[in-house]
Length: 328
Image (cartoon, rainbow, N blue to C red):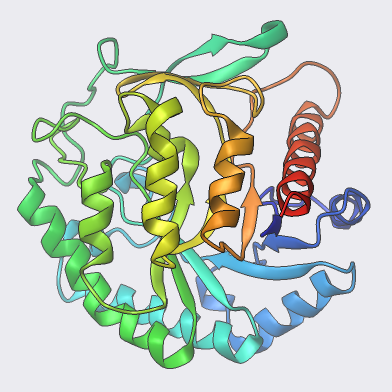
């Protein structure tokens, strides 16, 4: 395993900073829209990133974490045919283009609600952190444009996508890393009429069983999975072990939290409830071979605060990886 980032570089200067910080692998963001992501353009993008000594390990599919009304390809999760078939073909073409361009993996979301948060909370030194408290969360409007969507309907839409796209990933040897629902919600009540089936460990296990393939796996957001647990500081290690031992973790968002299911705050990497060194030991134990990266960090004070926050986290991750791998 090794340090990575999904921080979207604002310029080539950021890529130089990545290289100077010892980041040699990234989740990349090719320029243009999905229509521009041909094999030729992706190759050109990969070669540009490589000119800084950095490897593009993964790029996002146009299935982001946005709420469904803002989704790039909404009909996949709305279950509308034939529109969803056309959107699925767009996804398949990007997978084929990645194979031609030498980009080995893609990440994606299968969501209607997007990332749900409540009022931010002050954390260490007055840093501003994302939080979620179900008791105070406002379900407004009460439904998304999808209306009420129960578990069976969600699974049908997810399975419809998986059965058509994963075989293309198999054929082209491209790893597909799906992000869990962030955060999990009470089931079957859900949130805004949606049952979040990928918001529990059991749901993620079922998702993995939809299609037997070495290219069907998880963008394992450790923070999000911790949010699903009653005692994340005790339970997360066995969850990592379960998916990692089955080679189903294709990328890791190495994030910490304080709290429990339905009531948590994101923390700095070093002051949450999870022992991040112990978590890294488990990734090493199961032979996890890809990136550990921050996904978000608390908002800090000062100039270029976002990059400073990420840089602190990069250094922590790099030190943890070195300590864990040296101890073996």
